[in-house]
Length: 257
Ligand SMILES: Nc1ncnc2c1ncn2[C@@H]1O[C@H](COP(=O)(O)OP(=O)(O)OP(=O)(O)O)[C@@H](O)[C@H]1O
Image (cartoon, rainbow, N blue to C red; front, side, top):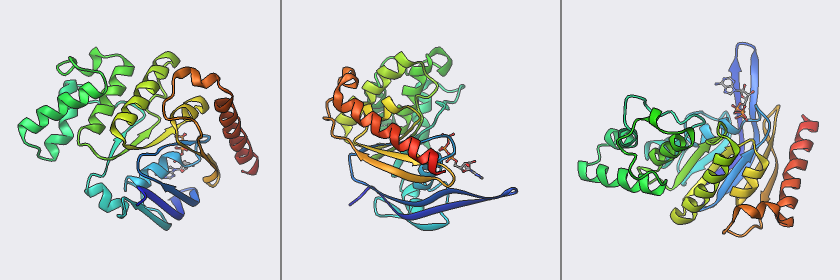
């Protein structure tokens, strides 16, 4: 069964300035364990699509299922973890306290909360930082903590909206490597929004290229790159060819808009 399945998905926002057609005719299937990046210019509907999957936005046409359920059912079944652009950690809570929060809301027993906090901190390489406050961590570490928080209740689906957009390139490279390792270890399905072509190509098994006004899919690229990806794979001919196809897709989408 597909984790995400969209058929003729449409979403028009009603605004004071008239309708905004944010998503048009989206057809997409995402299988378990895929790493799918969404790339496209500002305003092409990447965040809106993620929010639809998360059940936070209601489509105005077509169908969308998440693990075979409606997005609303999936949200109530806590089928996904969500990582936002800014780490969004509560400054008055420690890193451990932040990761523990969703577990508290869900009423996990104390021993289970402890185990999960320790486990997810280890997964994102932040062992020993449980008692620190967010301001005591670098931006990259804060973003890793926010990934840990999304992993804490062990959903099979992770939605990530430009999680590394605000970080410098060296930190971003390292987090990309770590994210791939984490994905390989956990086998989760990833939906990842980015503006960066190299990031999309490096991370993904599938790249969804989108174009604006209205937001549509202009290309879907199934990556032929192996699952094991050292950073220098970015210099390979295969990598450069996929990056070229993404760039062409973006250009064609802009010209059609
Ligand atoms: N709640 C809303 N009400 C009205 N219009 C909205 C709303 N949310 C998004 N939009 C509009 O829908 C379109 C798609 O927005 P969205 O945030 O999904 O784009 P995006 O591709 O994620 O952009 P960015 O890369 O800048 O984050 C934009 O034109 C945006 O202004």
